[in-house]
Length: 565
Ligand code: GLY
Image (cartoon, rainbow, N blue to C red; front, side, top):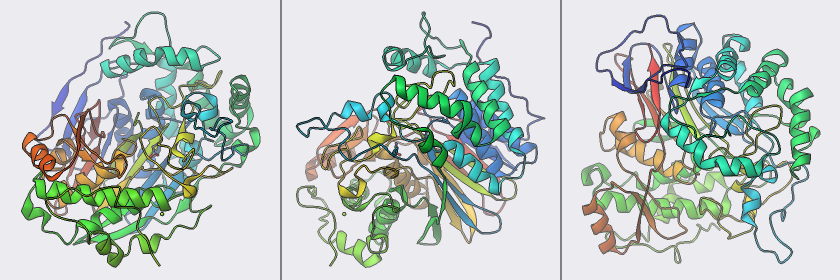
């Protein structure tokens, strides 16, 4: 061990102004909850949050900080931070404009509808999860450059901390050491070249992880822009890696990848406006459906975690996920009836067969009819000018496909598993889909990522989001209900135990510490309850509408940490 890792939890109660910030990759601490006066960043790793806060202090805006934080996460949080994956950025700018940038991965040109089926037509799900063939064409680097339109500082400044962290190394936390050790066999099996993540002896907290190849790739991106990734040496390394491992991404796939600016989903909920991600994320539409389905019930009166409130939310979740499975897919490929799916009358009609005190059934509740490793990571940022950003980004599974591009040092995603590999066959999150999300060349796979902002009187009130695969949407929904309806603090709202229903399988998952009395009441109504570990790892920032002070909180379920000034 080269340096001692200091991991502590510091809860600041006073508003804090930090002295000029330096990033020390060998000594850092986790700050779960901070209150600051100007700008705040919260992400899955303390060093990445520190990088974002440093950029804010140096005069960058929330978009600058989001770019720098994502690049730092690609180094210090390899399980989900990435340049080999994809993501979504949602923002509300001080001029009142909402933005949504889509840098979701795409299916390669050689992808085909039945590429993960055997000759008898059975799904070989491991193929869409492990190794080279599981990877979609990465979108993150294109997304970072698309975001530069709203940034203020030069890209070179934003990428510099990530290059330094990769080249000089940083000490890993106990959680990272555990995760790397658990994935060791897979890293060995799914790689064709040595990777920085595998070594003879087990990793332990305080060890230093060096990533010289990743530092080199980041330097190419710094010097050549997006072409430093999608063309030249890096692209050649990706294609060579594909050839060694029977993957199908080509030079043309990489050169042709483009991020897209989309129109953010924005809908009213009582006195608030919710701003979130449109398709190809299902998150925004499902969140609008969920909130629309519960809006007219006296949920606040029923109370937080009361059987009545939880049951209502479960039944809304059942209906939204049934629609998700049937109707949602890449809007560039399929016609999705977004207006009808989010119409208030339609949402009210979906709840007509809701019976308080009695469990519904996913056999009976189908998609609506009209005359369709849970690893990902989220970061939230609000700056001193009132610009707010929410970014959710992913490799899909933990460490994605677990394949590192030889010579370039970054992990590739396994996002192809987010397509419906065969109608009715569940993906790794147990989600089923159909035609709308079938594989096609160049198509974006459906996502659940739900980076979200809450506005009140056109001023940002919250920036929030979470990883968690299919549980992302229900976690964001619950965090919003916890704050806007049940009056919990931001910190409580993300940390309290969560529950999840996704239509199929017809069961309610609850975190292990979910209140037993509510579980018993739900069982009496006829629900099948399954206990499980953590649901989501949320990040949240609240901006006080009067004082403009910020409260940033990182989820207690991981190394999540806040920084600000
Ligand atoms: N890979 C998780 C999602 O995009 O929903």
